Length: 282
Length: 172
Image (cartoon, rainbow over all chains, first blue to last red; front, side):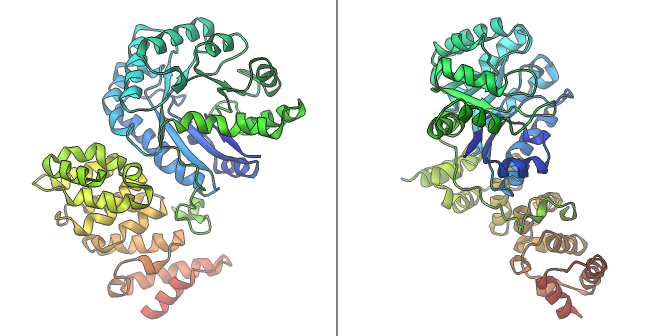
C-alpha cells in the first residue's frame, strides 16, 4: 500500500515520524505553509520558514525515501497582522521554485476584511504562476466560511478543478462537491474527521476529487491516520485499487496540475548511510 | 532557440531577469540538465553588481539552487566577494551543500574555516576524494584535529571513516 499525504506539517514532526511513516507506506508528502502556533512578527521569520519547508524538510524526508513538496502562502490568521502582510511582496520569489506545487494555505480564519483581500490576492498569484490553490476552511463558523470561500474562488476566475477546499466535514462536503472543486479531509485523533466517518463520506459522495490527509502538526495529531483511513476503507469493503485512488492517485493528480510534482524515487540526497540526521553530524 | 538560449539572452540583456529564470531552470531545461543550465545563466551575468546578484540568488534559492551557485563560483568573476556564501553553506546541515562549498572556490576560506569544513565532512561521512586540493592544503593542525577525532571514536568503540584514517596517516 502506498500513501501520499497531501497535507502534513513535517517541520513540527520528528525524524522518528519520518521513519514510522516510511515503514507504513507513506512515501510522498506535501507540506503546506501555515502558522506555527507562536505568531510571527516579521517577514524574515516567514522566509526562514519557507526555506525550511523547501530545503531542510525535503532533505530530511529523503533520508527515509519520502518525496517532499510544499505549498507557499501567507496564511489567513497572520494575514491580519500588518507586520506579516509584507510577506505578499516576497511570495513571487518563492512561487517559482521547483518543489512548490500550489499556493496555500489560503482562505479564512476569522473572515475579516484583511483576510478577504489577502485571499483574493493570493488566488491571483496562483493564476499568475500557473499553480493550484489549497484553501483552508475556518474552524469557527465553518459552514458560512466554506460558502464564502467558494464565492471568492468563483470570483477569482481560477478553474474549480485546480482548487481544494480542506478540513471539510459532513456538513460542508456537499456544497463543495457541486462546484467542481476538490474536497480535502483532515483525519484527526479527536476532532476534525475520523477514519470511520471518512469511510461513510466516501461511500456517500464517491471517490472522485477526494483527498485524505493527516494535517499532522504541532498539536494533537497523528501522521499515520492516513494509513488508518486506508485500513478502515479496506475493512469497509473498498478494493485495493479504490484505496490507491484516494490515498495516492488523487493527490498525485491534484498537485500534478502544477507540472512540478516529481514522484520519482526520492533520492538519498547525498546522505551517506543516513548519518547526516544524527546529532554528531552538526 | 531553446529555452536555455532564450533565457541566457534575456539575462545578458537584463541581469535581474535571472531571478525568475534561475529557479525555473530545472523544470524548463530538464532536471538532468539543471546544474548546467543554472551555470550557463550565472555565466551570462556581468557588471559591477555581479557578486550581489549571485548572493541574492543563493540566499533566495532552494538547496538545489544554492548548490548550483556554489559549484559555479570558481568560474565567476567575483574574486573573493562571495566567500560569505561558503560560510553559510558550511553552517548548514545538508551534506550536498557542504560538499559543494569545498570545491575550488574554497581557496578563499581562511585555513581555520577550511579545516572545520574538512572535519565536518568527516563527521557527515562525505567521501574526502570530493574535496578540492585536500592533499595540498592539509597541514599539521588538521592532522591534530583528525587525531583527536580518532581518539574520541576509539574511546567510544567506533571507527573513523577509512579515507580519513588514510589522510591522517599521510599527514603523520
